[in-house]
Image (cartoon, rainbow, N blue to C red; front, side, top):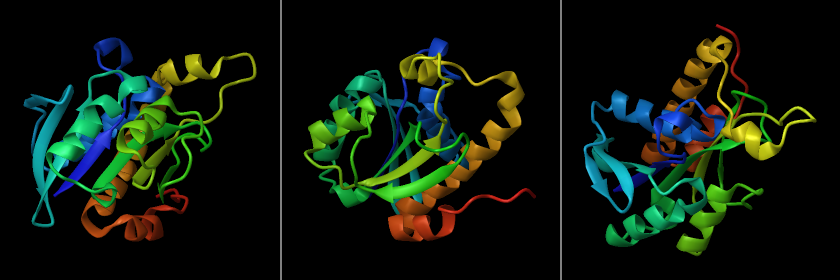
Length: 191
């Protein structure tokens, strides 16, 4: 059994925010697995699917980003999962926009969702699918940047990025983080 968590903030006002790219990826994985978020538990929306013959729970915490661990920690304990069973998808200002990278562990880099997860799990040793949102322009506060929405002119790039990140998340959940790193930690080339 695996747990795939997309980080974001609930509500339609946050739907196209950079901070919500984790929710977009979770939605895409659920769509690909032909499941929906019909279950409400652990202060989260949850979809159940199957990946490689193994049960996959897809979780979107509804606690707001800064308290994501309040949903993920209880889910991990309820299903008796280890950090190796967890894949988290989140936005990352240190990566250029629309770049996807997979890693295991490391610091939270100031990301409050990861900070909350680490506090509630007692570890940072889980797989992460990092989705680049880039650094804000000099006059823009980083919090305003991640809470800001993607522009309409970015629709095609965003859709391609979400598709790529969903594939990376599925690979990490099914074949492990190392396989996902080997396959997805390279720059996509124009097709």
